[in-house]
Image 1 (cartoon, helix red, strand yellow):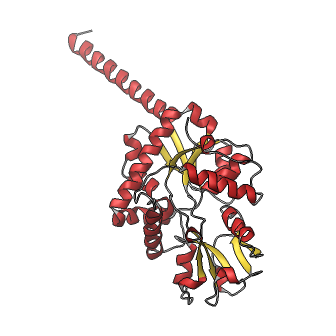
Image 2: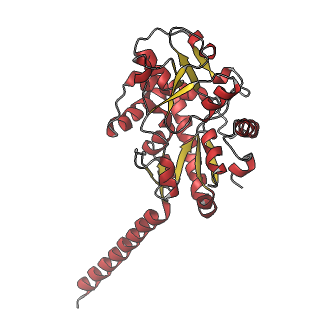
Length: 324
């Protein structure tokens, strides 16, 4: 074999070696760093920071291979977590406490909400707390714990009427009032043109029920085995939310991309209002800052409230929820 052929063979050998190393690296990344995140609901501005982190490459910069997979009716977020099909999800604090009480250990790796968004909206301009025994719409599943506590603590004797995900029952006049998130159903109601003023809106955050809501959770078992990965995900997600707060218009473009890809029936105006309200709820009232932390005082107070209302069998502590 002449020198030219030998040189060519050496070059090909080096190329094949480098290519094989590349394939091994890609396989390692896919096998070791795949991180599936499933928010608790369908695509909307409530999850804008995670979409930003994905689209701006913050997860990739952190060395993570993140996939955002939204839940479905047959595959809710917590079911995916329990089946190990997803690694992280978002939950309201009240939901997380209830799940931990049921025996599933969770770790809060990032807290985004610092304030409560739950409202009760009444028809005919009436204060919801004056409508004893009213027929009130409530979600068939999910974040209904606090509303049910208010019903008990304020002696309202509401007749709960379950609904899936919209405000049709209220608009049609089939119920007297409805629970609504200030960033979602409340704006849907405003868009219908129904006459409403503040006296018919009971905001729980203004009446002693200002408990934190959305945070990111993984199982304790997963956290113990993948601490570095979960910390990177939390840091990159926080970066996404901070970027969203600084660039709301571009963030809205990103949100609408996810909305359209997931075939969600909504509109840009509603998503803009949702984003503004979500970002407002992230600012702690005491410090005036986005702190991205679970507050021990809120965990203790909410856990005690849920126990009083017989929704928890035992107190769930702050220490049980945080990374240790």
